[in-house]
Image (cartoon, rainbow, N blue to C red; front, side):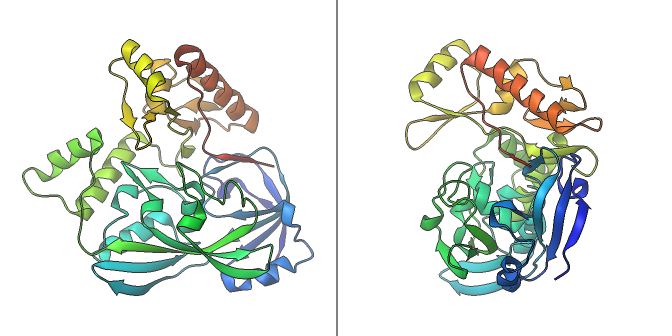
Length: 340
């Protein structure tokens, strides 16, 4: 296996923060994971399993082994009662996979179009957008268990999905390496467009015609492209903060003062708020610390405006959190993970 030394990580994190990896390995076949664990450079506590780098921020050089998951492949497992089970390898680019499912006449992932990253990262964060979370379409996750040294299949329930959370971020963090994900998709399309901007764009694009899955995907891409900068042009990690979830009583108090505040009641009685709106109300669009800035079109996105360093991003993150806490009494949590 070709382990390289002192590799530049800037091309492998979408924010473009400067960092280097002490050791680097490109893994094209997950079957070889046991071999990776036998490498002299392998120290479990200092191994970073890296996908698209769209949810990580490097706080300096990485003093360990970075394994870039580059395994590719998509295969159909079975079809039954209008459902289709597809397994995608962890290294598949997420948006390319979504487009492939549409080409196959399948639906379920269209609302999650144009989210950066790889298939393997999707269950970790339980990615979501426009009223859909990936947990709704995941059947199982194929993993390598570092504790046992064996491959295991985790069911949807065993993944313990929650809002932007999973077992891979919580109780079993660092235990499993995701090798592939099996999705259960639909042959018959069901429209999910309760978010106002998505419904509005579909109305404009489709008129009286009933939208299909590809229409939804195109509308989502249209909206995201209008709001979110291309990481290849302007470094970013997509949405930087989670949408906060507050109690019904706290939401009622806020709505009494801010009646136009976007809010989304949850099944458990809590209420999800729009982090981008909260930041925008603090007048922070375009606000900059060093080379890091709040995007001028979407307050939820922080961008690498001019060769930002880690300290710029951390200072800007804290400043935003302090402003929102002071004005609304709401604590924002960052989505990306800081690594060193």
